[in-house]
Length: 320
Image (tube, rainbow, N blue to C red; front, side):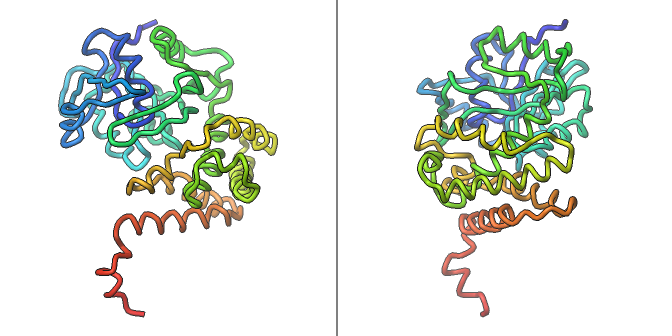
């Protein structure tokens, strides 16, 4: 079994920072690289990145650097940046390279496989509460981790064993789901309900500890995902929604999901991947999705507001 000795990470945000310190400490000097360019690369070179209170400076490479493919490429960008990331990693992909896309959603593996071949791509998703602002990332290293594997993992493939060995050696917490497709859809269901409810209402996760009203919205949105998943022969059910209640109760009160963080920081959100995906699948399958329709259009209004669309100097030109 070929050992993973060289890793390239694209996307040094909250999720990318979960992997970076452990990989950098374990691999030989220069064998863990962060792929970046332009002003982002310059800023990371100048300031580094602070992760759980420790400032780190990682080896940086640009997309143009050639002839040095990685054994493993971890894609940790936002869904909105996936298309560019696929172009940027071109010179990092060689004959034996594995690709681990840890994005939210249920179709990033399919998109990456279309670009580089399914034989390179493993399924993956994160179950980590993390945040990043102004170059400072925080996460609880003792809770959650990365889930990865083949679609089915009754027997572990050599590809899975290669990544498992690396994560064991460098102390990265992980789980290998027996059914990764179901796992992806469970995470998607949680994101659709929790992430977007918090974004719509401007609340942290902790409000779910107390508010029946917020929980009704959250659960109804999750049920729309369950209906779609069932039509696609993916086994999600009401028990999965009930099982998530305990996870919600364990989250710190002030933790904020990614979509709310994006809105508060003026960034484009991943609403197309969440509510947008639910709407498109619902329309294709003939399933009503009114909660996600509200999420989609409400979060789009937040994006328009952050883009300055409603400023006085623009509003005065609108004819009523």
